[in-house]
Length: 358
Image 1 (cartoon, rainbow, N blue to C red):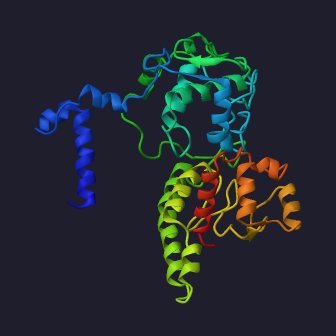
Image 2: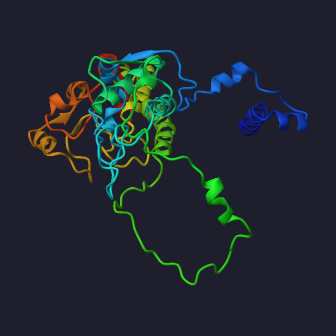
Image 3: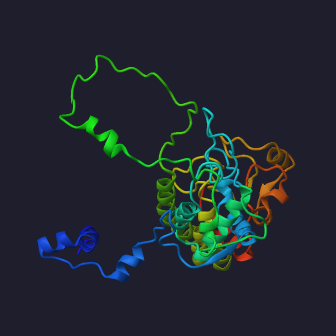
């Protein structure tokens, strides 16, 4: 069976499992079992229904937030570039340009937990444990001055926390007051004498070229073949008289594969592979051994430009130091990532970057 037919069969099976009426009508499939439904049902309702047992502290959440969230949302949930701010904005909802954060706008902690649990970290959703999700949410609450630094969030006390805007929403009554206006035959042609643009977005760069999730998926698909090709090229083009040197220079496929996985922490800001472009951070193809601050078309911070003028080259030693503690290595760098904590992860990322040609 081709992959297409396999995928079609799998999709039909899911549809029939989720829709017993269709299964009965078509004579195929069976009703989904409770365990099968539970495997897909991660929703947490505003009233706390579905909230899993677990706990996590602000202290634990700070470290996790730095590793998985700060690259987009900032170390203190203040947001990076156009990525959402999660803290602040108190008292701004009555303004023309309000700052909507968990502290200023969201009505329930349960929905914050639900979103983090199902959708984060970006590009690697549902990889956090339940306790880690509690810890991250606890840190977000702390960043909004809603809990103290020794607070531990759990399923037992989450519903006791009232967010400032809990009463700021109204019941959706459009079915009673508005839907009747939409009844009848819709107008499909010549509905208005003229169509004119009367307003435009106050912020003009809010619409991305394409969704970040799609970019990440395309990057993952594109980089693995290139990594394999780069490794094969190193081996095939090595002089026949120096096989030992060629073997030493060729990247370890297992280490490259691990580096590709760890690089997901970087992929929100840095692109690699075919067609990679500068975004929040510069494209990183061929970065190993490349002079710092020299990726064409990227606007570097002043401190990094100064380091580049001083002769900084991204060799393996310099990259290892920077990846461990970016802001300590180059004070004032725009890179908000806290750094990789494990030496083996640093080595893996460098091996992966070495496998990517310019």
